[in-house]
Image (cartoon, rainbow, N blue to C red; front, side):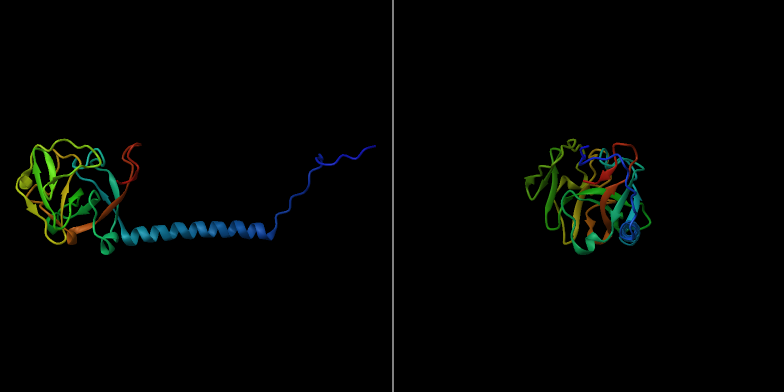
Length: 194
């Protein structure tokens, strides 16, 4: 009778080794530690804020919650197109505003014929926005000082932003932080802010 090599139908008893159990418990421990560290970091350096109004539509909608990085502006300055959260004129008794940075410190901003001009050059934005109907304060050139930023809402014709006297140029010291993650208000609006 010939011997068959290879597959057999006899089952071998599987033994769970101490090394396997140790590896599984170690993985579970590191996962729990990572989650706890993430929660601590978000609580220490982050903040959850609700968007008020339609100023940032369609990017962010009224009542949508966003996570704010409160630490980033202690190390870096805001960049053009960052979405920031701030108190208008430093008034901490007001609700926080959420707008997009357009003009940077030292630049001159003006709105002509419905478009933003920075230092005399029309700003070509990465996204097409509506033509601006009301220039407000930016009808004449605004020279931004040190640590001053010009902000606009994405919903350009329905936004309370740097064009209005009650907001004006936003000082870095009044910025709470940078919006880095938007929480879901509906299925299509969950993810990183851009």
